[in-house]
Image 1 (tube, helix red, strand yellow):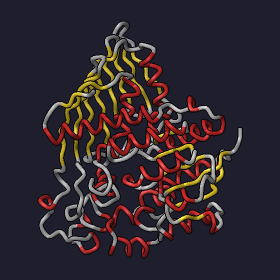
Image 2: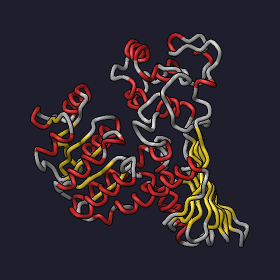
Image 3: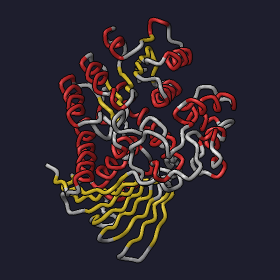
Image 4: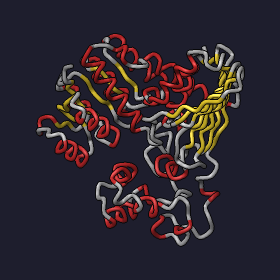
Length: 412
């Protein structure tokens, strides 16, 4: 199989992770990077041995250079997806685009249209489709093992410290500069549910809001920064405890710590917390992301689904229950408990290469599939395309409209 040449647009944690996987397997080589942050760009270029001529300050410069590779990984911030995705598709690059496609339906349609008219291979990073766990579960459902699926319960346990890191202090804390949390975090889940149920959504309703991480919940005496706060030692959202606790653990130093600072020393962490956004009190930030939300969906085939996303949980794998006419499946991301109503028998299926809570295993599986699809010019190796991704995003936008208006939204 031919080795794929790649350009990477956005050298943050997601772009780094995908590029490292692509190169480590020998399936690809990175030939250029576009990244406005000089430090990130320099570190990325050093890691992948890129000459100065292969380093670009932004996607516009990269696009102006013409087509330099077979494919592009676009891992820019949410609101900077449309420009590079459309421009690179028009140059003939195959695209692997970090989710979400874009914050709005109009922009996402522009991307889907660019993919279609240029006939390029496209993968949105809805990575949950690509786990062994999902494959086993999909086969069970499609084979009729529990009869017709009637209802589904799904839980996305965001995790108390993950909420504080990403959605209170971090890049996705404010929908005005990123995306609503349901799109930024849980478009994974909506897409996964549509894939497994296999029917379009007909109606959507949703409730949710930002309840806890706001000034009205601030404890008496709390300071505006964790390093100055007398309550910090007993606070579950202590930035000092979280980020100093990452030191010495390579996985946690890559994430979440690398989002805070590139200096992985105690002094480096404390300096970042003194002045940067990750040292702010969770009750004194500029966040507007919801900290709990429920979405109710009715599918065209009559299936109903309730989906809960909550910050107030451990950081762990999703939990899902499928209720069918002949049986029941209870899954936790690593194993599946199957109950057969006809015989009363129970079976537990454990999946050896189960998904990790941070879904890195799924990230690698998608990366491998995308590179294989490009190398063989076979888009069928991928489990979704631009139209499928757009369809699942439309459910997310409908849920947000329902949440804001207090109505049930019917899907076209």
